[in-house]
Length: 129
Image (tube, rainbow, N blue to C red; front, top):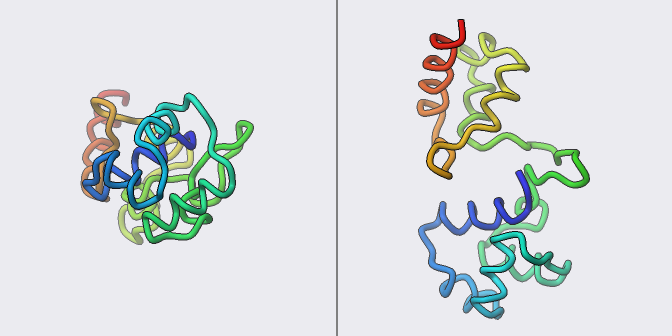
């Protein structure tokens, strides 16, 4: 996931508007919009401010973000990570399937929880096998 996608995901997960986050972070709405569209890159100070607005650490804000083609630890979306960690369901999902699933978006959005990811896995497996 790219940084701009992560920023948008954080805001969307919380049901916040651009204006809400911009005001809390003390940045302009157009600047936040540019960040979420990948048109510009934030400074470390801006990342700290945005992390504060979301009440998370910069480390958590950057979790799963790709830098120079490599992903940070925990690059899997939360629901998919939960599915992979599940003692019953996780072992049946190979690393190749995890990579495939981690790239999936439906109408520009990612599945939200473990059950959504599992259903997509089953559908794709049925189609592709």
